[in-house]
Length: 284
Image 1: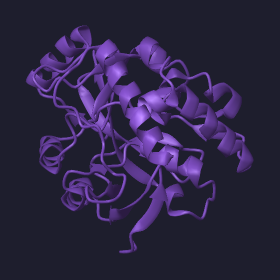
Image 2 (image 1 turned 135 degrees about the vertical axis):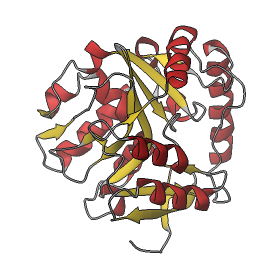
Image 3 (image 1 turned 120 degrees about the vertical axis):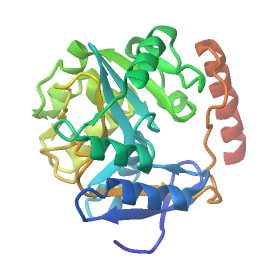
């Protein structure tokens, strides 16, 4: 791993660093280092990484490495909950606990309390107490790329298990993959997923992996975005090695809309519109 900061671009230029461990059972160590660096900044989610791959369509660029992301996928009965920014397994301590209690095919076991909270939150559209929004897939897929960009961190997307498993857990032709709801959520919405598919075509690949580990109810893991296109997206083993990317809070343009309260969806959209107007003003 290089100690050099990587300069990248969203709307403004800002910087971040790689945090890697090649030792087994050290996902918590890499995450601890990344979160210690970012302070109140953020660790890349899968959509963050896909956005930067789109901006840097060069396989030699560091963003085309294999990354563990702070995108978390949980199975709650017949529902898949994807949290961009994490929820349960978003701290080194919680991941260490999961490892010590025994993983299920690489996934961490949710506690009875966590399962109860998530079940209630699916119905309410938000996590109790923290008020993290949970958007059902039918609404999420209608959001534009810029609306998704300005959603508060973390946010969740829910979909039926049958919808998440619409395509098998394997590599698929790009034309088929573009129809997968799970792929669209992982990539950061419909617009960004389609742009990413276009980039993959330009890079000469004909297929891409969209693998998952939803076998066990009441378990969750972090999403890995691979450098091997055959694997593409897949649920990462919490007891494996990891590479995270952290963005420091003081870096120019790194400020995110971290959620404190839970506005309803209409209020969220108004917040998004205001944020977009502010960014447009900055860019003039």
